[in-house]
Length: 128
Image (tube, rainbow, N blue to C red; front, side, top):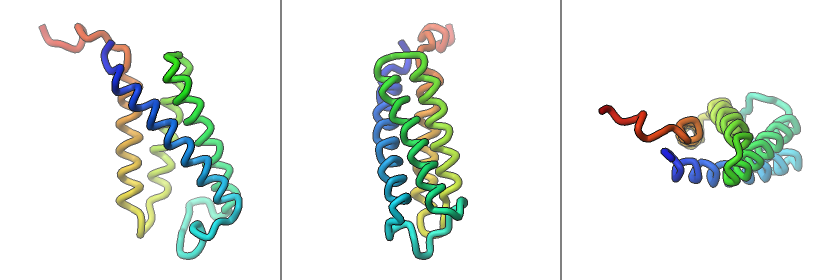
């Protein structure tokens, strides 16, 4: 099938990013010092940011595991997780970390494209 390696890469990336989002969410709920200071967030409440990150991370981890198992439900969760991750990356663009947020956005779009094109027949993609 077309895109098998890319979808495995997408599943691994979803697992890594989901785990990091859960850790960042727990840090935001704990009022960690690296979230305060000159950081400006779209959501003004740090607890709201923490819960959004935890929920997003759980969706991404579940999507990654289900995608590794080859389930269609994993494709749906992976698309939702990568789409929400890309949206969150755009929301988190700040003065100090704009390049990092754009790199995360580009990676989320790459993962999203890899999941969407997975399973297409190779013969249909070639011009005869």
